[in-house]
Image (cartoon, rainbow, N blue to C red):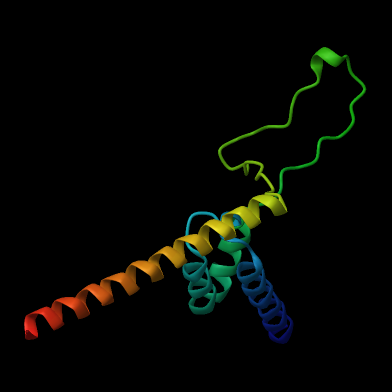
Length: 128
């Protein structure tokens, strides 16, 4: 009896920890992932049950086909917990962002080089 309870608890804890770690931050509710992991580690049974009950974001149930008049059809719900659709960026947009980042860092390096030259000139002028 105790061995079965211990085995079920161990599976529950491991399942909760794996689920917490593999989830994206947007799919975790109420607390940060680190706090959920600590909760499951220090309060195994309560933490695991709370994780599966309130901590994780479950996908919205799929709409089933209904045989009704078209006027009765409703759009899927978009509640506060529903994730907004994320726009996928194209390769060209990614490359343009990388080009801007490279240009920014090149400008920063140029500024540092000019500042070093200026500091050197000031030092030489102060020595004379």
